[in-house]
Amino acid sequence: MPTLLNLIGIANAASGMAVHDDCKLKFLELKTKRAFRFIVFKIEEKQIIVEKLGEPAESYEDFCTHLPADECRYAVYDFDFLTKESVPKSRIFFIAWCPDTSKVRSKMIYASSKDRFKRELDGIQIELQATDPTEMGLDVFKSRAN
Image (cartoon, rainbow, N blue to C red):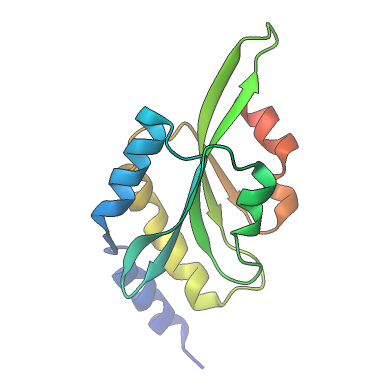
């Protein structure tokens, strides 16, 4: 069983997590060309990589199926909505997905790497942290987008 000091050491080391260039390139394509509806990222071998690219026609429900029930992930989602004046708009959400059932070590690594990773993705408009699907439901997206 790891001690608290070991876990803190692991989390501190993780905050220097490398970000694969593909993460920034694909995010830029989502932001400027709207080439993707969403991107799911994972930490693998001490770097953040792209795990899944969602095609523009994919739905919010499709996006949710790519977030594992017991593992942490980061994701960005390009959310389209209508303003009160019926003007179409979109907002780019950053989601830190850390289910309660994920391993403590994984939660600490994702938590300690999040801010640095978010800074690499220039253009994030809204951040959500979710531990279960209800914390990132469409109703949450809609209320945060306005």
